[in-house]
Amino acid sequence: MIIMQKNKLFQGKTLAILSGGGDTPAINSSIESVRNRASLLGFKVFGVRHGWKGLIGEGDIVDLTNQPYNGWYGGSALRSSRTNPFPSKKNPENRVPQILHNLEKYKIDVLVTIGGDDTNGAAKRLYETEGIPVIGFPKTIDNDLRTRTMHNFNGEDIEAVLCPGFPSAAKAIAEYTAKLKTTAESHSRIIVLEVMGRDAGWLTGSAIFGGAELGLVPEYEITKERKEVFFETVKEAYMQSPKKSLIIPVSEGVRWYNEKEDKVDVVYASSEVDEYGHPRFGGISGVIASDISKRLKIEARAQITGYYARSGICRKYDRRLTTTLADKIVDLLLKEEFGQMPVIKKMVPYEELEEYNAASIDMGQIGNKPLPEQYYNVDKFSFSEAYIDFLSKILKYMRYEDFEYDFPIVIPEDLK
Image (cartoon, rainbow, N blue to C red; front, side):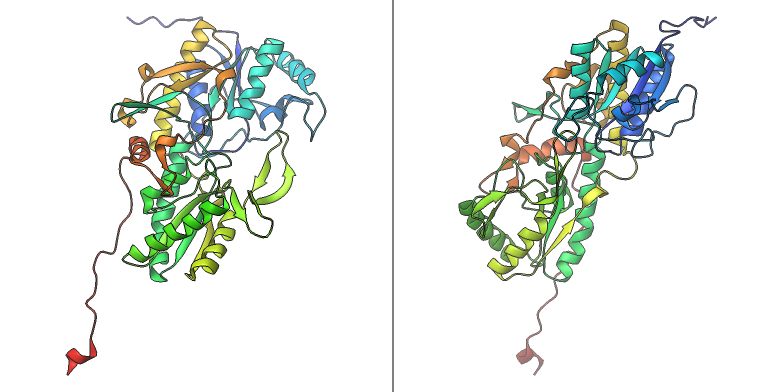
């Protein structure tokens, strides 16, 4: 006979979950997975709405305990914001006293923060300065949050990154690129595809799984000299293309040489910054497409993916990734190891996303991780075999079709 444990280990305790920063398709899956496991341990589970903003003023708290929750639905049902608990140039107010007051008022014993370097960095600081028991949960479609995930390629260990949200976004960009191929081929055009990625080109590279060949990333700026080499590379690739078409994915944070101003810089969509000091990028694809048209006399168009990559349902790989990391949170809660973030130790295919491949790292060691040099061919403006192997763990294979038939040319003399 199975005897149900009446008083669970954390009965009478409350765990709260918040999500901050940009949304991803995997946040609801993360919330549901953490909620389910915390509930099994006996926690009452609250949701903090609108990130850190939900812990200031009167607070904005909802009860997630024993409530239905759709983890496949993208985005965050708890909403999000870029609120910074600590003083910043945009907002000099110190909100920490309000946060401490609300944690006490709502009797919150443990806080799980789903976010990137900004959200989890603030949580770590609160843990260190105020002793708040926090556990971070990784989240970003840019995939530039240092998770210390190792990728073995041809016997070499490469420090990679694997964050919830990225797998779904990568699949979306690959599919988007594959769709654009048909219109690029129909008009013999070059399409410059702008992809989210302020400081890193992880997501931009996923376009090669949709048929792209070249690409530009923020890690390597396009100087005056490199710009000329890029044009020659584009011309050669275009001329060698059977259908005289190309799709060139570029990260929104690419540093591009501007002849008029004689400097290398990003393109800003707005000069306004958020509370963490980040400006909003956007429009680099239009600048590059225009320069290609002028320089090479080849028709080029710009296409901005915008929020497409971070929208929509949670894909299967992300779903299993979030549940695996939530399993690791159980271990952290049982050991009361706070100030930690669960991560995957090594790049593995879907079937191997299990708790034994998970670990945890100190939240103070997160930081940002650019695309490794092994993943990008700087001189060829292309992504390497190592990167393809890395992404194949998530997407398995390239997902695009080709119109392979080539028609015979009609020669008038042959008709006589």
